[in-house]
Amino acid sequence: MKRFGAHLMLFALLLFVPHLTAQRSFADYYKQYPFQLDHSAIKICFLLDGEIQEVVPGNDNKGHKCTIKSNIWTKDDKHAMEYCYSRIPHHIIEAKSENVGGQLITKCTFQVNVMCPPSYYQILGRCYKVYPGRFSYASAKKYCEDLSVKKGSNARLAEYYSDNLRVDLSQLSLDSVWVNVPHLDTLYANGKGKTAAVYVLDTAFQYDLKPGTIMMDDERSNHDALCEHTPPMTMAEMYLLAERYNEIYPIHVTETGASFATSSYMTITQEGLNETNQGAFVPKFNTQAIRDVCMSIGNVINVKSYPLVSIEEEWEQERVNGLRNHRFHLTSAFKNDGCNHLEYKDWDSITETQVPVYQMKSQADLHDKDHCNAHSFSFHVEARLPTMAAMRAPALCTLHSFSFGYAPCPVNAGFELVEFDRGNGTKFCHYIENDHPVRYEEAKVKCSEIKSGLSGFESPAEFSAVAKRIAPKTNQFDQHYWLGGDIPCKVDCRQGYVASWTFGVSRNTSFLNNYNHLGYEWTDQKNFDTISFRKDVNAFHSHHHNDYAKMNFVCGRYPEMVTVKNDIKTVKNTS
Image (cartoon, rainbow, N blue to C red; front, side):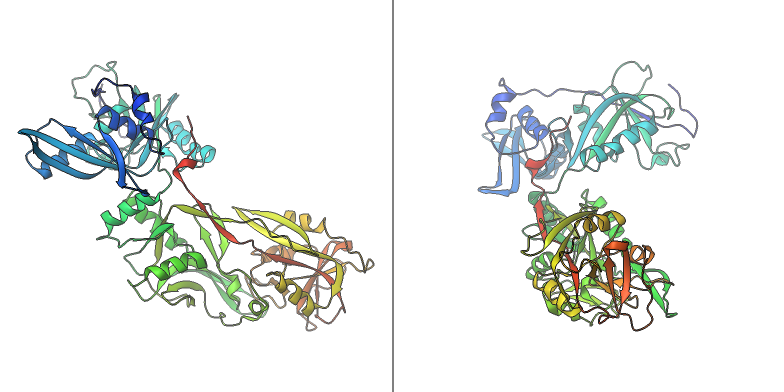
């Protein structure tokens, strides 16, 4: 085997060495532990003749530990720790060099907090599996990434980030598999820009090199794929990470997660200006930079880290926790313009769900005018506060043992309910009043009574789903329904836009202004200030709120946010 040119990739050799244990069956050993625990970790504990216990007796949330004793001599506890790390691919929480009755032993205790599917092998909080097939490097990489789509994980081609992995990966049944090797240029002069590698575990290659040596191979050659993913976070893992990394990133653990502030001060990013009909220029913002920083910090400690979602439930946990590190902490929530706190949205990165920061709760929500100059959203120990876009503060990142979701839309007597999936996990509840036409101000009050506002739509499909259920029982000649819109346009406006949705009932101002307006003027002149839907001509119309004595109406709201626990029992048994 020779070194190939700079366009080529790598290979490495591993040798499998089995462990020996007492004469008992793994099936009998496994039955001793009825709680949920990673299968490969139990097997390691079995092979090393260890005993499994709860880290804190009676507290399953603090994880489980395995303690093994070896006749290997070590000089002291530091030497014992080095030995334990060399043998066991898990968090070592204690290592002791002991003299027991004149016999020198080394005791290792390792902790297991996350759970991989039974067919995977866990190494330091990551799950590994060999997928057989004759893959080129590119196809192996794509195969692993496609597993994320099929199984909802964050799978990728495995990364060879440390020479210690050659020992841990030797426990897998390998012939030759593709992996990634960062910083290959430190190993080969012609390795700059290359990251792919192959592990080889057989005797088919005749060269005089020891097991684990990295060699180059053609990226078009065929090998199996070694894929990895990070399993769902658990409370035990967060407790351990908080203890280990607290000096670098002070981590605060709550009942459902853990949070930490970024070390640098941040601000939200302005990405442009939009010109309105009135000739004003409205700034546009996003918080992608905050999401990127949180993700990058998570990569350092091998976890999925996200910006803290700015809903009230999480703020309450943080408030109780103190939030004492800094006066303010930024979140990833923002609004572009508008003067209402209901316009604020945040992003639950775990489920890729856009969530409302505030729920509509009362008629008072419809008259909130205190947020016109605020764009970003921050946490203070006393309150959740809107802030100017230029404010600089550390951002709050989080590790979650749960994700956010939406509860079912509540049923309200006298209204016909349409629950619509807006995509990315977002649901919206529409309540159609077909029976009793009312004046505009009364329609707003009626919606407020069911904790909603006059409704809006984000797509033709959503609009169609609601329109199919609109069937006025009175006023058949003129089928107008009040909707939630402002004239002139106030939120996410562009040149030519007449109106915008109110109170966060929709994020798609373009749909409102570019849909059909047949049968009536679509203008911000003549003191027009409201919008409606007219079913018989399938159009949005603009009005003054006194143009029509009475109309039917559609109310709308997001359902309540709920937390969905990512319990290790929910991990799929995938093969």
